[in-house]
Length: 61
Image (spheres, one colour):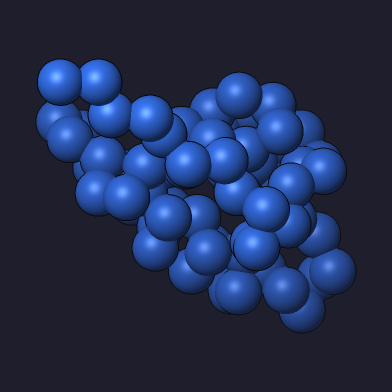
């Protein structure tokens, strides 16, 4: 999975607490859907977060 290095576009977190761009993590999960697994690409933990339940980041300015 490609991760944005500087600024995450539409940032979301998985149930394990890792942050990804929404498009990056949903694309990753779509590609791995054949295995039936929604694991975090960072730590490998099976995610309890579905694509529709991804936690949105709060922007404080």
